[in-house]
Length: 177
Image 1 (cartoon, rainbow, N blue to C red):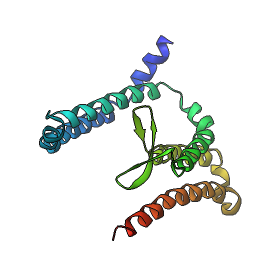
Image 2 (tube, helix red, strand yellow):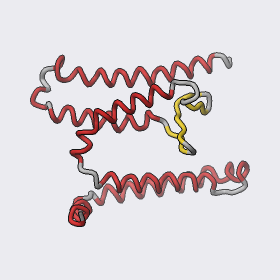
Image 3 (tube, rainbow, N blue to C red):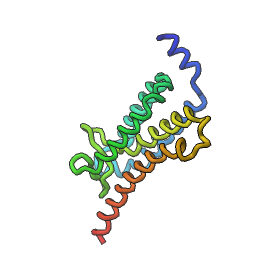
Image 4 (cartoon, rainbow, N blue to C red):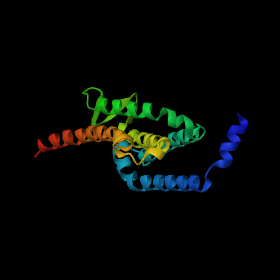
């Protein structure tokens, strides 16, 4: 176990990790700079949005370091399941009472105090799925109809679900005119 952790730490792309941390730090500064007045007016403290962003950043960094230590072969095995789970979440968003409306748009799911958009997960999961699928079948990639097209149907389903959100939002906005 200890040697696996040491091997993973040795193999990290530290320049990428430093770039991620610098961008995240810059983002925190920008959030504070652009929202301190609004935070003070609405919440009585200038760092309300900064603290929220910092909590999200820390959660993201913890998840980053957890996922670094998961072998990529597991991602390959789990990718179809992750895509199917994401599609189910995209469908759940459309169900009243499960999908949460924010700013006249029903794109969110709330679990306890955690609010998230399933579309954010599907972006990563579909990328992992396509990479896994095409890496296993790269020698057959020339057969478009039988090898390239089937995963594109999954992508089409995802697009249709996301576009159904857009059409719902347009219907809501058209009544406001």
